[in-house]
Length: 305
Image 1 (tube, one colour):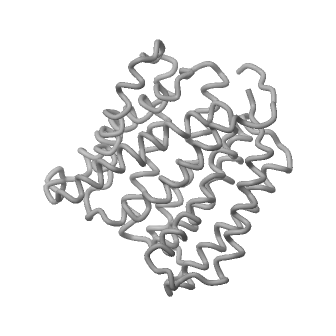
Image 2: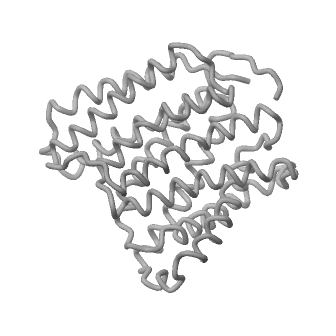
């Protein structure tokens, strides 16, 4: 792999795109909970197929649309990371509390930073880990505030364990993307990288789903489920991962995934919109820490090239 040099800051468009990413991901958690208990692997494959249909027109215009043979294993691995996270998310939505899932999702940026160090696409320095820890503390405080407001409690069972493995897969996705870009194996187009990772991941997870899940279970899908799946495929898969791939070209994996700390902040705003009476002082410390971490990230991001 070629040598990489660290240059300060990503572009403002990349940061703005990741702010939109955080909003879409934050909205996706309650939407997933509205789906019926459908087979998670086949559901993920359908979601990826919808996302690929939405990305086709954009990716097809690139001169580097067709991947080389040495890029295919990387795209397949990236696709499995996506499939692993979403399959775990669909399954855990009915076996774990939303609070526990939101809390576990806080680990993704720190996992991405650690994995980035192993793949040599992160720089070992104190500033970014400090920002990540600050954001993690803020996101955790927001999750605890939500538990206090709704009378929920943190727990760790089988559902939480599966979702944590999904979080590891989610953290690995931008790391592999960054490594593939740095080594020249992946296309420069964010749309092409997103399309092929979703396409190959969808094929692999769909084949596994056909082997272990009864196809007849999809017959229980209602019109409401189908519409929610289309929304998740287009907005919460195609658009969010295109935004992540666009930012990955400039930002490090830790910086990209740090915007996940805004997800519980979005959940808080949704709670306030539905139940204004829940607004209280307990939300203030976590909100202040999360917003401070994002502000520091916007002003001091570092990007290996």
